[in-house]
Image (cartoon, rainbow over all chains, first blue to last red; front, top):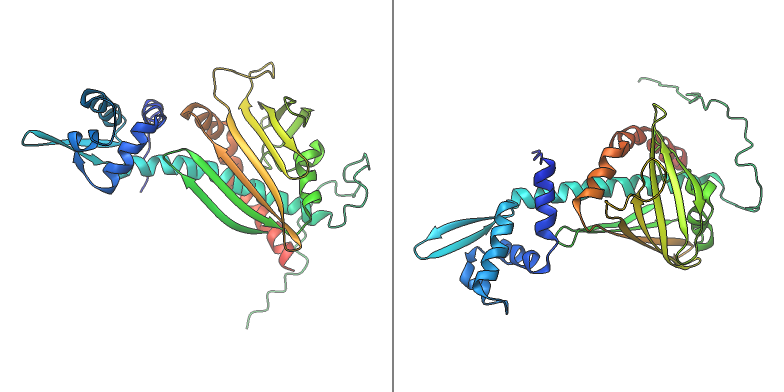
Length: 140
Length: 164
């Protein structure tokens, strides 16, 4: 499943998540859908203020609201949270690939004896040709 | 290398990577401390990085650019928050404009790197924190994504070599 977000959507999403109260509301709604008034009990701020936070989250598609009698039930929207997770996932890949490259670098000079040598890599590898020298594909 | 864990806290926009290398702490520190070594891994193979400034002292500034396959340059900066060689480095990592100086309209990422002995090797923990979507978007738009895909082949080579 791929959820593509527009730039505006991403801005809304991160803006919505940039506030500790709103993150807390998402976490609570994620555990259990509940009314705005039930959520408001967890905070010292006014009901109206909590309602405003919920509205910000709703615009960012992080939660949905549903009328139930006189109550407004807040549900978390997992798809959007997953989309945020995917953005982080991509960045995670950036670091993962970096650590692989560090590993390659460390493996190259196992006994870094003289870090003072000014020439980096005097090895005659002008065009690193991937010699597939040991490719004896013996088919049985 | 062993990837010990990759944790992300979506709500707090924080990523934590823990990896272990078969090299002593002092050796792993060099890949951060020596700009010529840093250049070899900071950017993907298709967007290699060049560090023009690299000053690992508190408040120190680094300036780098990454050169793309078309000769295009993506520029970035670090501001060093704190250094405790060879164990800890904390820095802000952001994007620069054409002139190479920080583009302050985009929020930087805060990175904390710690190195500690683990058996005969080193455990490296990187914590990366975002404050907004912009720098993340920018980062992904700067060719890293494509670079990463192309990098996979090279990484496989490295890992195969290691296994032989």
